[in-house]
Amino acid sequence: MSAEASMNPAGLRQPDQRSCGATVAVVARMLADPSYAERVRPRFAAEVLGTHRRLTRPRLRGRLQVPWPRALGTPPWAVTRELTALTGVRHRTRLVRWRRPPGGDDVAALYVGDRWLPRHVVLVVGHDPVRCYDPARGRVVEVDPAALARRRPFGRWTTVWFVLSPSGRRSRA
Image (tube, rainbow, N blue to C red; front, top):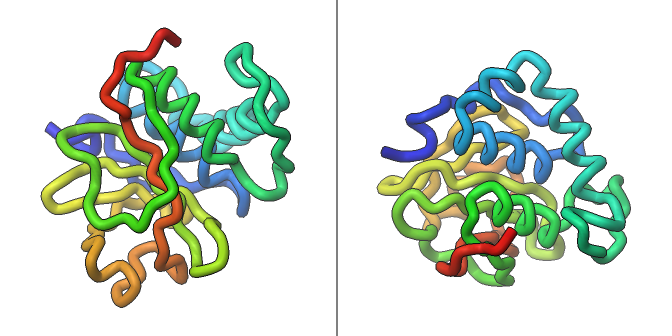
């Protein structure tokens, strides 16, 4: 069963222009923890904004991280740490040209953008076909990696910059 089937993220939109990474982190946690999802859904926007503040602090989960201005969104390394903590499986950030999604029911995030910069974060919630939760739209979209530039499932963003995916090792976090 896909993560998408366990908790429908439809209607959950990012509350501002820069909180897509934090929104992805909150929805990933909602997918992993139904009781959290039930508690958070009525105050979703406040939870996302609080998560965004936490993920962009100089210290995250007891470790220093590279400073990052909140105005630029959520840094990939902060979302990677959050996904690791949520799943118990170490995640890593890879700079890639995305051709295929991670396998099985793995939780993964994609940083997408134009050919110059990453600008948006989406969450892989289903496989075969690939489905991604897009926090800007508040809905799940079907994605054909080979047709990404032609179909534009994420608005004007056509290039996958980073894949935040499990490394296969259990985390100590």
